[in-house]
Image (cartoon, rainbow, N blue to C red):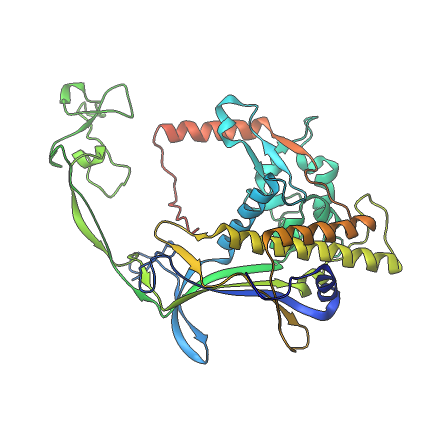
Length: 433
């Protein structure tokens, strides 16, 4: 239990109004296995000659230059915040607008469920929404909401606030919309990353002993009539253009065709990997900053119902909307902290203390620290939205649901068909999350 005062709506309103530059949270983390336990940062596509697949660099810390490694990037942290927000939204604990594309009407795509603006990579600007339609078959970008979003700008952000406020907090660029690269850009107001300090890189080993004792030297062929199956009998093999039995090819094109290991049988010789062999660190920190300056740069020239706002009425509405957005951003921070820090396999970190939110003054004065739990963050968001609603800036929990357009359905089906046939991607994708 924190002994810090709870962040109240009065404090939030004052901060958003100009008292503060930002809220921040700096959380010290350590491996769940304890100090010195190895963790595995995200890997990135690098040149084959590169000594490491990790993002290692020298940073300044406490007046010293120190080797550091990126443990979770800004983009990955944003995605995790959205996942945490979605869980809270789905449970009904947090109220804010979410647009979804529902695939449940297609039996073969029902596993996709509903993909929302909290899962789509580019939020409301994503191609998934662009290639979906409303209940009348109207493409999203041709709906009232889609047109309003297309025309939105930081100087006129009401449409994004109304339909996808998380995009105003976490940022979005409408680069694939009707205006192409001239589409609106909304900068990130909420930024977070996790960095490890005092890094020492390590090695990892891999091997496999086949309990069947199958030797890799056994010749294996593509069986005739089934692209997925194999045979060791040349008479049953698929024939090439010369009429010869065709050796089984591996998905990895660098591996020799015809080997039993291409069927995932046989032993795998022990190997040592020093390019992505994990790291040990002195410490890790998650640094999160919610920029109130960025939120104050957003303008709202109309209420959500389209009524123009002017004069003092506009100033009141803008402050209320920005306060609601700040409360949403703080809820994202709290929900992510509560969700925990299991970032990937062998990368479970634990915080050394409860979450603390610091208010950073605009003039570089005294930093004030507050506490905020999930329940308190939800109450803060509800109270902030209630005030915004009273001045015409109300949002809905779920503005509307879209359906995938036939062309998107066909695209997914074709992709799955190729996947079943074992067709690989042209470019290797490295998951850095």
